Length: 101
Image (cartoon, rainbow, N blue to C red; front, side):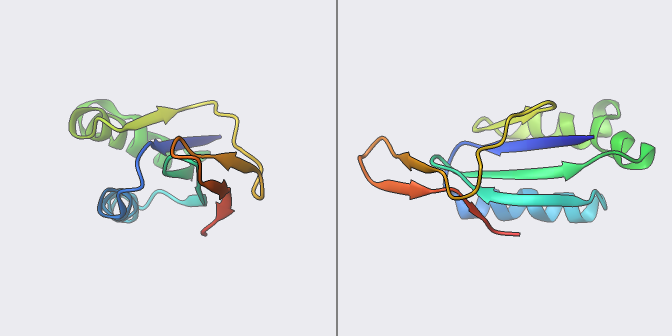
């Protein structure tokens, strides 16, 4: 089972903070992509221990994100853009979805 942390800003500090939190909680990262508005961190929560660490009550990463970040959504069943897809940003610049990791 995969879950996406959808960061709707290109704020590198926020992105790196969430990557760090994921590492501290030892939740495997399946893939990280850039999107037209920010980043997607796709986590593999297939194993019970990883799912518990992500979803479990007030101590889970899900609640941590919901409580502390307004430009971040959790998508438990997302549709990911295909790497290489072209998007036009709101300011008119072109952006291609890229795999970062």
